[in-house]
Length: 75
Image (cartoon, rainbow, N blue to C red; front, side, top):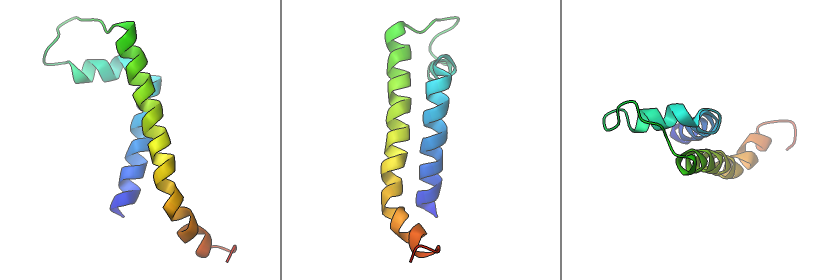
């Protein structure tokens, strides 16, 4: 059950980081920077990490594919 939550979080955060990198940057730096703007490299790295989170979630799903298929019609 814990692994399912981790996989769901990785999918959610990866998609959110890829689609809203400015909001993620603001959340990361809200205590340190006032009225700041992220650099283009920072935006690129946030999007890149979002893609890595999605790939990591897909890779973590691989061990569960066998379990899922055993509980369905494809025995």
